[in-house]
Image 1 (tube, one colour):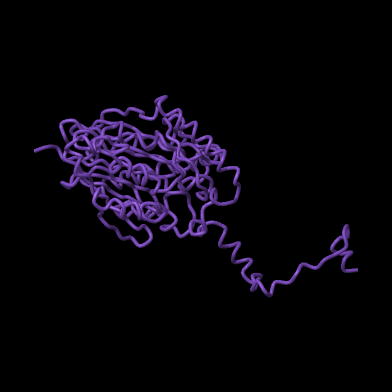
Image 2 (spheres, rainbow, N blue to C red; image 1 turned 90 degrees about the vertical axis):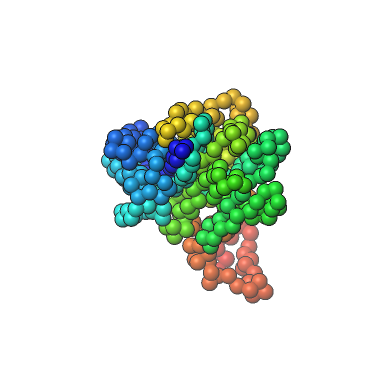
Length: 385
């Protein structure tokens, strides 16, 4: 029987050096030591620690299935230790995503975001791990649609018999905590009707028609958990590639278009999603623009081979150039939409406080008084003398 392996990617913002743009090496080292101990003790089979912006990303393999308390407990311990180091160093927003001290067997609902899949290993099992900073889970909606449903992106949908039947998309309503399975190409337009609203309808998983999982996204919304703005959700994603799934090149191709996503400064602005190598995953301009990294691994007997930094390729230079041009254009809007998010996305910012302060000053339009006219050059006090 083929090896059944679980891939767990769990991330959290545990504090950043100088604002919100990068993880301190000491924090990454602390998390690595915790995971190394877990590997020695048999909790996990292998691991890799990285970051995107100010998010610490833990990539783990094991044979314990999804939502395993031991594995989640190990990740929680790693985040807590890294946050302790962040506090000792006086880093900014230390422990930001750790919303509770009471671990109850699962990190979900406590702040960290998790994407996990249990698979039956193929003889060769290539996967791509994506991690994004300064954006929300719906940022992957457009790329996932193109990877698994757009024949102009994924040639295999047309010419590979194993992909030709299409895929099943699991879409969740993150406000109602409900979901639906939609088949492509049969229900393609229904799918697009939902996922075109990425702030609410998020692709969580993608399956082949035979039930084999192809992709999974972390869909936790921090503001819905905490009841206030505590940072954007900065989602992670796992995608299987090749041999019955889209090729690695087809998985990466959507990111040549730096599409607009919600997040950026204070989680309140739209901006281009810029594909970058890990060394450039340090969003500093207006705390952005939003970044995404892609690491390619082979999984063999629950061990990780790699990674390859897949966006460390001049073929993505044009995407980065376009992203910078779009960033210039969007920034020139200042506090105006469409750069600033719409009101429904601003409810966890200061906007409700402003509206509360002004609510008694709002009058029916017909009742609004005309401003009192005063002589040119006169001060307000002089006008009343």
